[in-house]
Image (tube, rainbow, N blue to C red; front, top):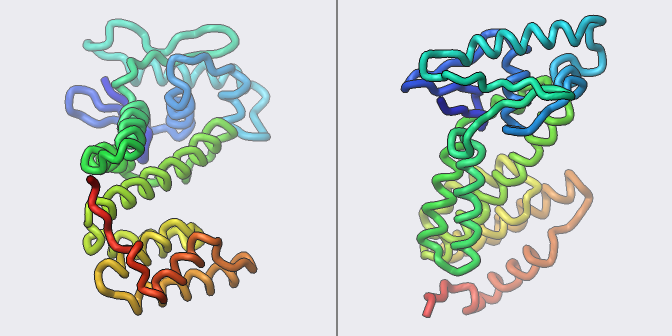
Length: 256
């Protein structure tokens, strides 16, 4: 049995995908999976499920939801109970490789290691595999508490890091033309993320689209001024100046 929480919550069992039908049971399972093999207190679980206004018999209701979750996870291939009662709350027992977020972390760390070592082909493979696991935005719609919100915030940050590193390695491999459309989508989705504008300007310049690279800077400057009242940072400003000068240092340098 494997578990997926990077998008739509799913339990994969023998090739079949299942999801608890009750929202509160889904929230319970998601919260436990965010902290696998770790005790989550009853108080934390109650807050994740009901927020600031839990019912008077919240602990009794939580016990019912835990029982429903146990039944949902039970099966002939599951001889042991995955949900363990351990004061002050509960934990779910999941082997490391059976949870997609752990597989994502492994690919991401491999990508970081390869990128830092200038092994860009290996980096793109690892980072691409990590991004493929991010198959939806379901977590963003969960009405959870601090555990869920912190996880969603972390996930969005590492999604950006992963995408940025993947593009950087792709540009280092000379894949500037293939990167343009991806970066145009990313700048539209994350209009305040200057790194994607910088990468798009480089990709356009190396694709002999110098005028578009300069317009991208103007677009970034206009957006940042309108939204934040700020000018672009030094990295974008210096790149814009280098493009105006057709600086040779902007050309792709092959690794020795």
